[in-house]
Length: 156
Image (cartoon, rainbow, N blue to C red; front, side, top):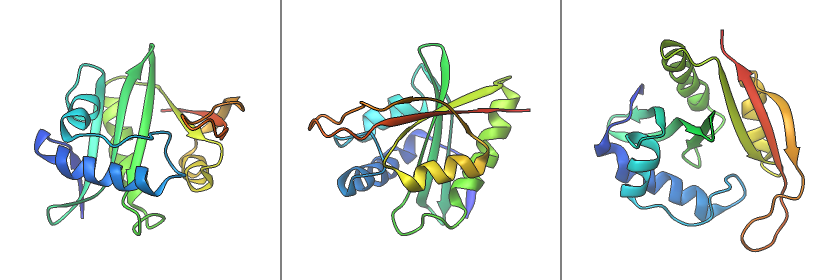
């Protein structure tokens, strides 16, 4: 497996992976499937995208991580294929993301994580993200209140 910068050609596999996670539920705030065109625009080469990397295993995308700018803050999103989580892919993605952010002079990265996403909270904690806020009343479109935790890492 290699970690590399995402290309527009990766958008279909990235969308498939994200849509599988959305379908399972519980670990992303995204609720509706994304088209490859939307994934490309929002995460690969759209105007707000700062970095996007993929974990490529012989042409098969096992995970991806994007950093973008939202309302003046730098935010990260990480998506790893169900069945391959907690095996170091996310850490490898972040190693590359950290280097790309440092090269761009980015010093702080924020993550907004569903409060009921225990694996996601643990992942970002392992990377060194610390709590900086919470939105306990954050709800999904169904009205289900899941809460949200805001975390930040300072890159050195």
